[in-house]
Length: 484
Image 1 (cartoon, helix red, strand yellow):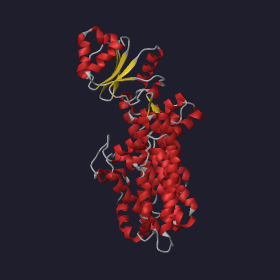
Image 2: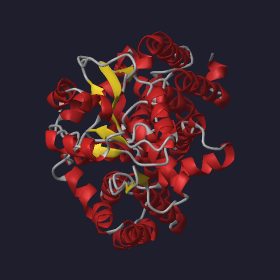
Image 3: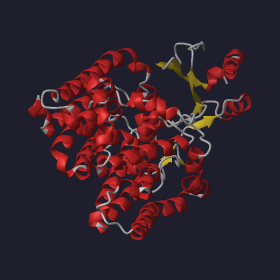
Image 4: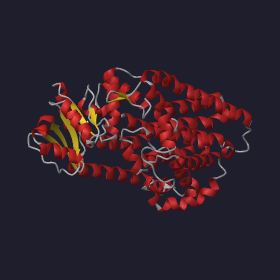
């Protein structure tokens, strides 16, 4: 087991197995995964890689870097779900390699111990293992943050090359998930006097000037996309990408608003199963002993400043904390190596826990997907909608459409959105007497004939209602209006 731990192919193989099981068994989940792949699909089908689109409208909620990466892999494989879903797992493995590199920068004299342990700590985490297979933006942001952190650690001795990495991390981080990258990079850069050791002679005027220039360079990299995209996408899109989305999340979140203390509750859960190990709790007593090290102080500054900064942002979700996990696991690894809290006699426990995590996640998918997978798989209804569009039938979505069907059905035409009010519904029905309405019946309470398409979805069912059937009987229309 010890030799296995020290061989990079071992944890790489375990990560590959975990990803293969999850992607192979789990359908794409609405609304995030289906929406993001639908945006990538519309970019592909339009052959427009400047402005992301969703349902034929400019999509301003996320920058394009992840979508560009999906386009890149589709150039090699064609438009396939499995290849698009490989992008994030590859990023997760990249972050693990970046963590090993960061370990060497943080503790040059302890590289052999720490950079061997960190991959197992990251990969064995339940939260990490689940999110490394999901089409999300947070692991891409994590990779860009680690690129910038590596540059900050390099900057005192290597000058230009370090600040170049900082600029690249900021610019690509903005293209990954917006200005939130600044919450990860700027606090440790500004608070550098807290983590740089006294033996390193730093001219602080020069340090902050170079930081400012790196910030400008990173902003320039992001603006190289944002300015032409804003001009091409129109006034509303331009206002959204330059101000609306950021202010909406930071000041008064239009989604996922939570109390400021939420992350203090969520963070321990994200560190499972490692917080269940008694040896780790013993290792925490070594924290004062490692505080004199530059690397340990750097990680503590990053960790504390990011928790504070993220807590001040209105919008909160547990997945937003993913960039903190490599920081925490690097600290865990260093603590475990201090005073032999994880010596040769105990080091194999890490591998066992990681393998246990793999088995647990695999068992969950093997059991849960046959029981619940069909209730989350939107492929059948998406293909039905695609067939209707090919037959030139007008199709509308009752309520807000989040792009659930576009990628899975490879839709070319947009879906109309009908607000949940009686006047809008009646108006659309009168304008499209041969059309179809897609709706979610939450409790499967609506009675429809067997000829109407329906499928289980979450706690209810998805139905494609013909307008002719709705208009054929006042009771049918009344049932729909009641739902609205």
